Length: 158
Image (cartoon, rainbow, N blue to C red; front, top):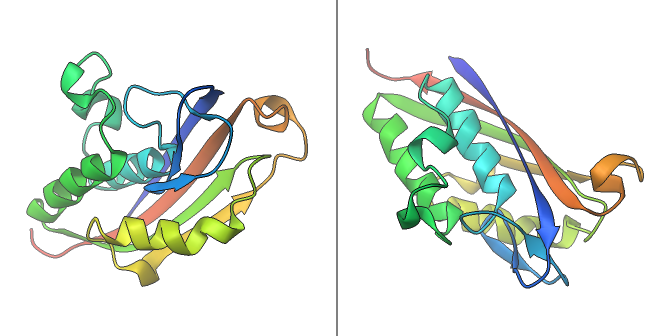
């Protein structure tokens, strides 16, 4: 068994869609990023890469490479899942905390779990918990969103 921790944060920007967990969420701002800015999916990716002992998301999908410009983060997640499966690992659990003052995310959790399951992760092993930052820091000032993820994987083959 191995665990991995992922973290990501993005600032809000006008003129962008807000994408979290592969779902477009109605809001007047989106998250700035080279890809679609989906910090939930990015944190999931980094937790998986960490658990598998692989390089981080920035090394695999650098923001200096134009092929990743505006890419759907769920497509990156599919690639990472394929790679960890090739290394003989199976994902057992994902637990995430999405820290955002706005918008309220609870209504979108089922859609996020469904969208993430379309990458190959069983919906029943995805846990998403939205939290506020109690009006503190950049999140409390509604400047962006941060996500912390932990995952559990097991090695099936040596």
